[in-house]
Amino acid sequence: MKVEVKSKKGLRTVLSVIVEKKNIQIKMDERLKELQKDVALKGFRPGKVPHRVIKSQFGKSIYGEVVDKILRETTSKAIDEKKLKVAGQPKIDLKQFGEGKDLTYELQIDCLPSVTLKSFEKFKATSFKVKIENKVIEEKLEEIAIQNKLFEEKNENEKAVNGDQVTFDYSATVDGNKFDGSEGKGVQLELGKDLFLKGFDNQLIGVKKNDTKILQATLPANHPKKELANKKTKFQCKILNVKKPKINKIDDNFAKLMGAKDIKDLKSLIEKQIGSQYSQALNSITKKEILDQIEKSHQVDLPQNLIDQELLIMTKNLKPEEKEKHKSNNEKLAKSRIKLGLLLNAYGEKNNLKVSDDEVRNEIQKQIKGMPGQEKMVLEYYQKNPSASQSLKGSLYEEKIIDLIKSKINLTSKEISTKEAEKIIAEFNKPNIDIKKSKTTPAEKNKIKSKKISKK
Image (cartoon, rainbow, N blue to C red):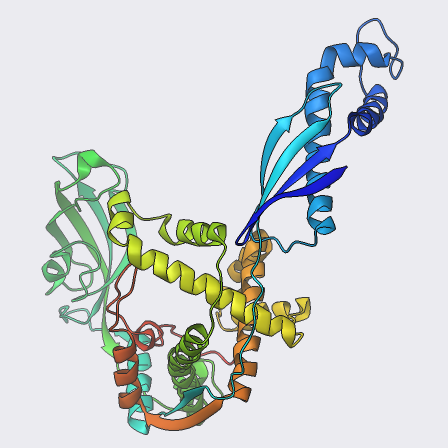
């Protein structure tokens, strides 16, 4: 194999590679021997089909298979021989091929730039610590109590009012005819939430246990069966039970129902959970503050193919007109991401930072423990998606790098209230978001939604 640098411009290098025909023939003969053991042709004993017969029958496909293997092997050797650090997938341009000929091709390679890191010691950033006030904890405790409210049976003669829970069976018809899903057993509705059909709850106000009531409602416009969309429907309901809400007493017993030891433990868990959610959002702000300084203080040539790949990932779900509208901003964001990725990776390599498989497994276990009732789903997700584990490994690697940088820079710690935290987070989310704007702050997104409080 002969390898020469045909051209070099910026980060792009083009190599000319020649694989001699005699080496290709050796590979062809080896493959023919392998096939001879398995090929079965009429008129020949198994394993005794002559090479020339196999070649006449399968020559073109065998040659293609051999050349494909040679290309994979020689491109890797050529890159190693010239000691190139490849960014992305090289492009192959076949110049000459065919049986009895040398294989000649060009290899277009975008290389990783050499990165010269500057000292981070003069960088400044603020690390926030949120003090969770008792009032916030009590409010969250009340919210959890409401989410987990209990119901107790009303007397048979007591009528249902808003907030009560009504259990019923129903039989529905459209134009006097039954349809798929027209029967329901043991349906429970909390009146006033309007979770069944619009206006349905109001018609159940005033019913009592053992009543039978005819209700009218309109099926939704997005009904799975188009012929039933927006159809007026008659529901015959048999009321099985009417229950009224029972105010949860927030005490040790309630805390145990929520998975805590006692009320003090439950409050502690709530405080940690809220604090963790604010920390997650505020750490993103600190990280952005650091990354902005790193990006501004370094000049790096960027491989165009990496920028193109990043743009493809960023815009794959956008319509063509959206891509065009945000083209400039998205290109800028893609370049920023690639640049920071290269700089952080260089810093990680310089400090010999690595993430072990054990660390990835431990992080997956943390996620599993943090999602009670969904443990199997989380585990299966990582088992069935190797790329998800690889992405998690990348996140842990980046986290290690950022933590090391934080230890080197002038990092000021500041304690703030939840109100101040919300203001800072809201302010952070005001600037342009290149692809889609969001009105929700990280803290709002991460508010406690689960009915159970779990220990991590």
